[in-house]
Length: 311
Image (cartoon, rainbow, N blue to C red; front, side):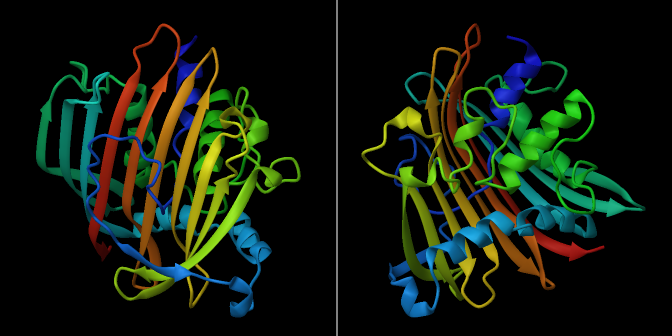
């Protein structure tokens, strides 16, 4: 299997989301920050809403992509924690970075405020040992650079590498849409389509985000009667601001296994509003993945971005 194909497989894992953590892999979770409290389940019809209203909002949303575009107008501090695990789910590697990001004269700048490593997360040339870490760096470190260009997100960019990047962005910023060109699972990503929607049930609740923002929680969950490999997305949870119906967070639970590769991944993203603009606040990842002739990768990430200042 070529390196690019391996990277493409990792692309399948890295989606943005937020919500319940009931099915997370049972090991150390670096995310101890709890920002949402659910009050109760609700009958959405009493709120003059129906399931299709939430589905339409998920499919039409561009807010997550825009939030990363908005970063280019701000300086901020990022704290990045990475943990890797052995076959017994014991920590065998750690990395911590505290970085001051700024955008000066149209160019991104990064200054390390703190940096520490243990284990063997990085090669001697500074590049990540794990494909998982490499992809995470690509998505979130480079998010402040040229990969998030002004304008709407599109699929089908020219060139092989550009095409892979396009698929990755679609997986992350447009969950529920069909993403072509992903081996074995392309048809399973369109969870609201006619072929897949019968595999899921919907749950609705209300709560508070960041102690004060009233929110709806919309959970799309695999039916217990559906076999594991009939779906890739086990759960997609979306958090909506009740006042504006803006999406503030997503959580996704992904799992799939076949003879070529397997993965078990949960990922979470939260946004916050600064100066009236949505910006990334917290990103977490917990996952395992395996491909033939390559060591199984087990990793957790926590990225917290704060102290945004307009530049």
